[in-house]
Length: 359
Image (cartoon, rainbow, N blue to C red; front, side, top):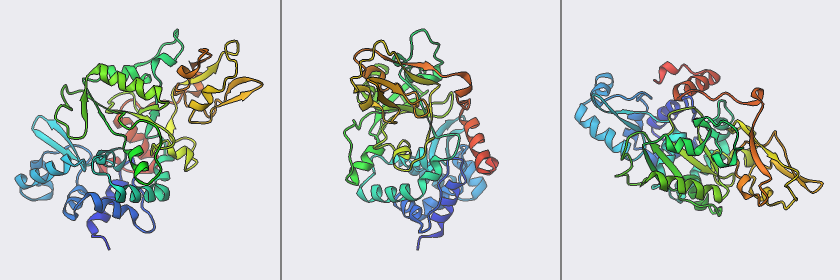
């Protein structure tokens, strides 16, 4: 039996808009027990999404502010909670399990944790992925979009990188997890990009390696050349990462291939288009599409628009430049929440959660 603190933390994480659904046999509690001590789980279960100083937390929960500060710092260093600079000092707060706690465990992930996560993924994670608005949103590299089209900054991977003040890279925990359970893929590991508006944010990071802007762009292009799909948080601002994903490894995109969920990611406002005058049916583009959105009919590539997410991965692979992304009709473009708070509010409404109880 697991201490009640783990049950309270699991329920608290599931009360967030992202979700952390329970299983019949409590595998989620076993997962949390690998990350948190019972004392840490008890404290985390009482934190809010909004950041509070140790003094504010002590006023609300009791305890010595100095001791709380040391405990909170230790938890934040291990990626169990979030920490942000406030005017009054460092503020600490709860973060979701995904995207959040789990992704910060890339340096701690071992075979045991990887297997337990896989069991949880197969039993319960589909509930997280099937809720709208989606956790992730697909974005293309600007070069894959037709040149005469306007591209808004939140629609382009390059523009999102340019909007940051600090850049970093870390290993993809999804592909590392699959490798640890004996199911690796050939895509590169070191391509997950972290972003910050604070210059030098990753200079001292033990897990995230700091990059220059140009190195970040090189990493993005390397991921694109490997056929990886770029995705970010599903909002128009406040970007903290660019994931470079594949359906064989990514915990989000695997929802399509493993769990059969069609709308695990919000598609981009673009769709692929074939220039029949240039296409000669080499089928190379079919190998690059991870969503089964391309087919060969009568010797020419055709796009299955209902399956195309507008990632643009196949575009540079075409030797005849017969593929290009074009903007979808206005009625087919999914509205992107303006910021993280708007996303939280929409998701909370869908799940029937009172967001005020966790902010």
